[in-house]
Amino acid sequence: MSDAWPHQFSDFGVEFSLSSPLPSAPQSSTLVQLKFSCKRMHKFYSVSEDQTGESIQEIDGEEEFCDFQDVIFEENSVLNPASPAQLLPIYRVLEHFNLRSEFHRTIFDKVIAKVREIFSGLRQGSERQLLNLSVKITDYTFYFRSESEYVYHMGLRLLEEGNFRMIPTKESFVGTLETKVYNMKEAAESCAICLEDFLQEELLKLMPCNHFYHEKCIKKWVEKSRYCPICRCELPI
Image (tube, rainbow, N blue to C red; front, top):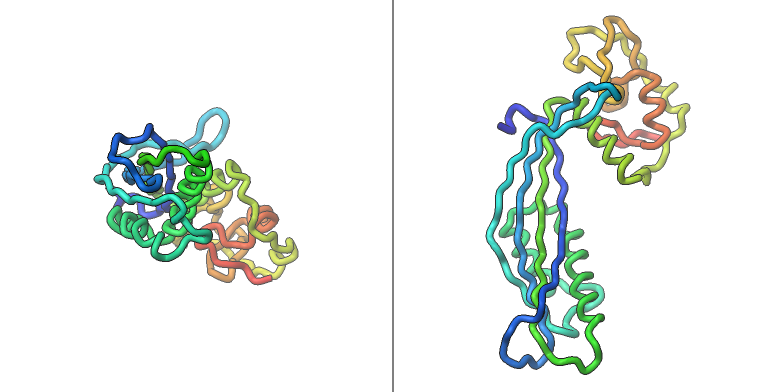
C-alpha cells in the first residue's frame, strides 16, 4: 500500500512504566530489569478542505508488534556519561527491533536517564531488590501522496512543537533568487508551501536546489527557516 504514498518521514516515541519489585532471591545490589517492546505504526495522511480551510486527516493506519527483549542494569553501574559497554546491550535491542539508526542516540539518552532517575530515588540502605521497568517504543512512519501534503504536515508539526530553532535567513535573500516562468508541463503543479496550484506563465522564485515557490510564500518561509521546505537543502546566507 505504501507504494502509492511515496513521501514519508519517520518518528518514534518512548514510554516508561515501573512496576512493583519482582519476587526473587536476595540481591547483592538493586537491579533494574528493562523489558523492551516495540510497536510499529504506519499512518497514511491526506490534505482535505472543510469549512475552516485546509486540514490534514489520517485516513488509514496499520500496526505491527515486535517481541520482547530484556536488559539488566545494576545499581551504581550506570556511569555519567554512559560508557560504550552500557550502551551495547541497548544497541543490540534496537538493532533487533530494526529501528532506524538516527533514533538510537536519543533512545539511549532517554533510557539511561530513566535508569539513573530510578537509582537516585532509592533510599539509602533500602532493601536490595529487582525492579521491572517496561520500555515501550513506538516506531512511526507517516505516508503522504504528494510533496505538498508532506510539507503541509511538517509545517503543522513545527507549529505544534514550537520548533523554530532553525536560524532565520535575511528576507533580502529572496531578491537574489532567479525568477522562473511556470510551464504547466512542469512536474510540480502546486506550491508546496501554500498548496495552491501554479498558473500558466506565473512568475515563481527558483531555489538553488531547483524547487520553486510563489515569491510571497518563500518570503514568509525564510522568516523562520533557512532550509528548502521540500528537500531540506540549506540556503546560502
